[in-house]
Image (tube, rainbow, N blue to C red; front, side):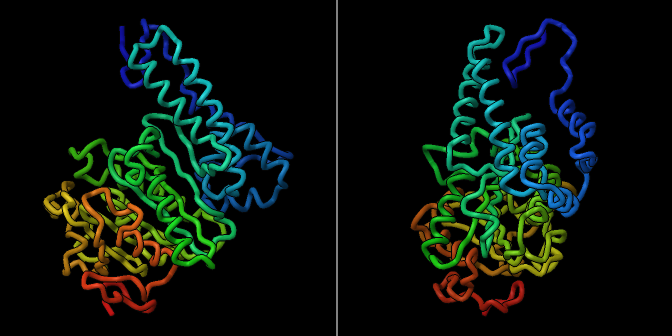
Length: 380
């Protein structure tokens, strides 16, 4: 017998069932609406947005119900449609896991894992949740929006690092170490520092992250795939509000690889606890965005060799003066995961960057770090 440890299933040699994801994609390609063929999933977010703009609300919601797994993860689809589609997907996934909890074909570990996933999906189905993407395959991916993307004057995107999956997407304990907790803290702080400015924050965990700090975390393979997804995600955002990226740990590798291809609306890239951005200097990222970097007291990332030998390593330490980033004060933040803790200097500075209050962002000596016109790597 073959034991499928990842899911807890035990099989006895029966032919494998058709891949559900492949079936869903094939169903999308076979379908049409109002006589019009549905666009290829390889279409640009601009093309997807144009297709949905040609239809009315009723057809939007019909597609969300028919093809939730596709529509909920398709960059360029109106966000309200993606939220609705992902509610359908989450409800289906929760029901499937609830059935697995009592399935005697599962190992005890498999049933326990099913229970944890069912609880996570129930939480994400909360009435006030705005789930921008959801994919339960593998270890899972997700993104959530705090605020209103359609009316926001500024948008912040939190890009997390290693060991991020559906079960760590949010936490009860150590809340602000999770993508959702980071985004909640940033959104609350942005509202506090600029209450008159509508802003939105995205907890963007829509890429497959390395497990632990092994070989996959020391290379850029998963980051490259994440960078492709991040570029499309930003291209698919509604409106034209400026966007700031807040890239933690391995997430800064993702942001570094994405930088050159990001839309011009990305005005700021902030890295915290970074192992490197796959370049030796900020001006080699190929972006006009301001690049900011910070590292907290006691962050173990400082002891990771900042080098690049072939595929191993991510290059120069972004807080080193030679890199040329604007060095943001982290102050009271502690350790590798404390940057988004409420009350920390790092979070306060992040919120100022996210809301465009650049002249109030503080450097290592507590002085203002730059002006809105400051080019990359040129302190005030």
